[in-house]
Length: 392
Ligand SMILES: Cc1ncc(COP(=O)(O)O)c(C=O)c1O
Image (tube, rainbow, N blue to C red; front, top):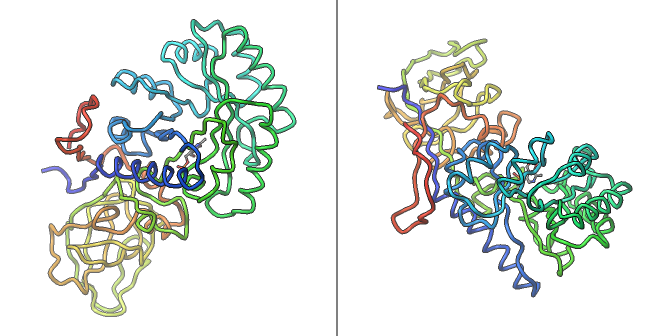
């Protein structure tokens, strides 16, 4: 029997989340009397740890897919995806441009080196480009004073047939927690892109879910939003739960109890004895540890659900095991089901918060050794080509 731990990835949940985001955008668009933005479903990091195949099945209804690696883009094309694919960091090397050309990808151009590579390239067909503006994140992109010159060089490439559709993009640094900063980044972006026609793309999940934000962009431009985390059923906001946003968890991590220890007051649990019982305490040992991707920094009190009942983590997470409090769940014995996060358990965001991190990190860090079960769409679901199912 395999070790009793399992991650379930729900494609219907991903489909629900995408549809929920699209419906929200459509409602807002109707309110503003303008077209709804198109959606790049962000699938980098192997669809935020859910698996590329699973992301593809979940987001087959998106207008386009956004990712980082040529290898990921190639896999999507091989699986039959014919729609747009955006490389969020563009290409890394002149040879990549050949693959971009062959696969028909849209690229972000965020720096001088990429511009030079493109100026030397001879693609067989024009490459669609999003000029990336550095809106204050200071990570990638042309600062406003350099952006116009970069745009002109791309326009020159467009007239030579090297560049196809030319648009602009930007990434907010605080859309999740600071509307004032976000608004000023948006205003600065709007100033920069005057006279730069073409599609625009600025909104990650937090910005997409912030009412009225995308609608400030010029109406005549085709707009693309770029939600990632919300499509997987986690929240981009510290203070708003995914459930309150109408999202469903796409990943559930569960395991079983391997052992039960009765600890008398004064007895301690786990490495470092970080938890010491103050009353007679029933301790369950769960087949999940940091080598499975559960955060080692989650401490006593982190929420967990055992046999359908909410309880808490105790002490330090080990490589392969962690301890939970069963004192008030007397019916839970060896073999009882433990939901670490996801459906029927705490949200991944709640666990992440206890560990001083974000749901993104936990989802992306699910270890390859954890067997995965994939819930596919029901019979009447999409007939989009599937990858080989992941073995359990
Ligand atoms: C350029 C870009 N766009 C969109 C996203 C999606 O962000 P989120 O997962 O917060 O929606 C990311 C993620 O980091 C990104 O780097």
